[in-house]
Length: 131
Image (cartoon, rainbow, N blue to C red; front, top):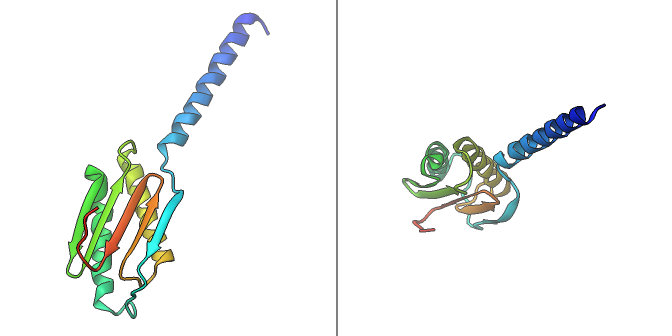
């Protein structure tokens, strides 16, 4: 292999490594920094709070990535979600969706919960709050 071919091969390899780094950084980081669950719980999915909660979570899913910071309210449930501003909107959506699933798995039937991930956060409560 001559010097010119080696130089082209090195440039191509450098370009591919750079591209792979860019792709990795575009995906959200789902590492959990902390989570907390309210010890007050509702009885079951037939409880009216359950519907209020899922309306709030759906609203957060639909709107958080528009401004990277969104508050929602539905009857007795209040929610907030926010994303790190450097995320692409689609990655903000993915991060908020992951946070919602995380809270559902970790804090099922809780009247309030919050999770802080590396790139986004989500909180819901049965009372108004400000972040």
